[in-house]
Length: 168
Ligand code: SF4
Ligand code: SF4
Image (cartoon, rainbow, N blue to C red; front, side, top):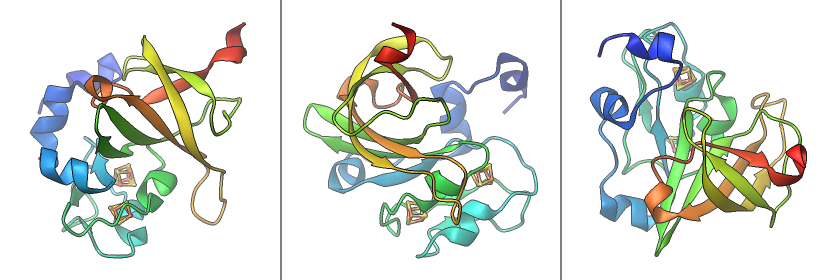
């Protein structure tokens, strides 16, 4: 993959497919599964170190993380600990998908809130509903983690949220 994403500031879905194989539709329907969107080959290993089931492989610290989707138990620890905000979990549930994502913006929404969905560019693409909030846990990482229910067609686009009241 070339490094155009560095000046652009975000990855496209085609670039993500170049760096990692995505889970099958069958796996996505089964239970939440973690997917790394981590392009840089830099010495960084917290995700593979914290995974309780050894699902994240990284032969050397400079390699990109690769997830064994059959091993992943959907604990979200990799999402919580990644300093690059590069791990997400995805779960297909009928016409909706649940996306588990880091949330660095303030305020942090509450469970049940309707929020504005943002794509990787930061553009608004619709609305979703927060179904779980994991507050910041300093023993794991610095970032609160949200699970947000989104229309299934936005499952590979929605990667951040904005609280509605924050700009009203
Ligand atoms: S969600 Fe948990 S089990 Fe799955 S890859 Fe991340 S740390 Fe490992
Ligand atoms: S912790 Fe995050 S930035 Fe570091 S290798 Fe893992 S996915 Fe990439």
